Length: 430
Image 1: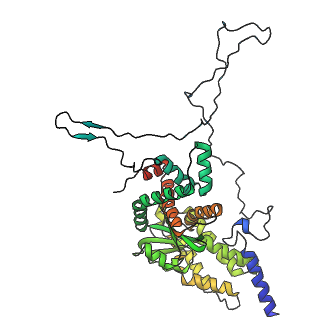
Image 2: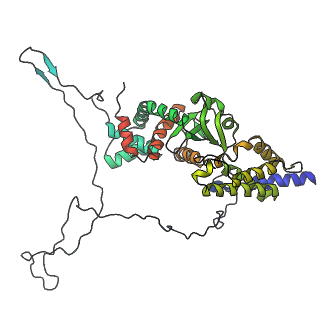
């Protein structure tokens, strides 16, 4: 009977663990998902735009690019000719259209002249970026990079899109070569992003799996509120972290989940992702009716609520509310788990081992209680993989990581992505 009970508990944990509310399983993969059940915590907010939300609408352009006049030529009642009658404007409406677009072929011509005084033949120089008799210009390179890395469009569909919309013939091989060149030009900026991330006071990190050449690969991300640095690697562990951040993060509060490689990173302090902890606790609570899990979940939720209320001066010295939460955490971590399920025991041991990293966010104003910023950064990788299937080569994955790092950093700094890519593609090798 004990064996049966233990197996039943394991089954409940496994089934409940395949739940978007109790694990990192996306809702689309959830077993027995119900479209009628809402797992979100109810609030007092009404559906739709909230009070104070600034709406947006299509605005009329003050001076239209083109006008089309609709003037009556004859009377609708008697048929009399109105050509000589004075027309009076009664109404105007604007329609936004995109004109037909065709690729523009620019021919650069170099001429020579003979100096009448010394006889030297002087030749006009070609632009530095013109290397062959014909090539794709900066705007094409920027557009291909934009469509592939930012909009996640596969190579073949890019070739079809350019042909259908711009009458521009381009092969999948050329698309790949353009991305290689863009990534190569982005390397100095990519390295600058890495250096600035390492010097930041708060850094979030995460990783996600993908496929490179049919093999299991990994994308690692390190991000701040203004920077994103993405790495493609065949290794998920500490080796990749050490390769790119050999000096670790001595000035940084490092936010991550409980993956051993992340916790091994030397940093000023660590912050565990509370969202991850809450999902595990919710699973124990639902599947095992674990009271300790309910108490720990309640404590973490109160800590998050306190964070939202804290003012800048509250971080100068520990306030009573923070001290109380830390004392309650200490008591919960001392609980006896001899009769608990093995997964609850493992969770409690892990939390005990990293207890100093649970409430770091209550001592640093800019440290978040979760790692959602990193999860948003790796989500773009998952979207790319979902649409394109896999990366044909490891180098292709690395090129994507380099260009995507520049794009995400551009977005975080509220700059135009296409403009940034155009500047990047236009860079000349030193």
